[in-house]
Image (cartoon, rainbow, N blue to C red):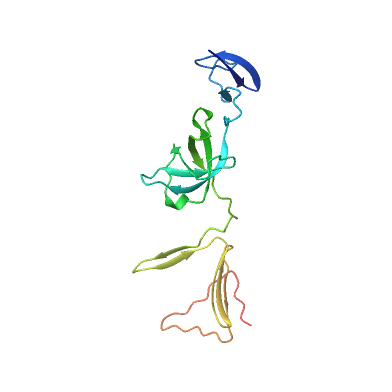
Length: 175
């Protein structure tokens, strides 16, 4: 039996069996099928609507002739958190009533900055940021910058020590 096939963009007739591309390997773009107008060839983006009683995905997609979502088989794990997400569908032998979930479309979200790392234990309190850390209360602040600067600002600044109070630097400016 001969079927019409699309192989690497060239329509050809092929018999049943393995289809090879011009380089001898399996083709990545092989779409087999007849000229049945009800057959769905290629991928379709649908939506995961629900999970059935035994956990099978119930899907809906543009062109679904059924008035309700269809039970599908899946090659990826689907769970309740994915309900409402877009999914990639193909159809077993092109039949629109036999969808196969091939994957889940990732949501495109605006990139948010990475969260600040915060480490707490009984001996140390440490947190890390990429650019700077600012500790602020009213008109007072302590700022640590990526360049190594430590800025202490406030209306009144007290520096007290019961031992040695040292000020070291390449140069020290007072007033």
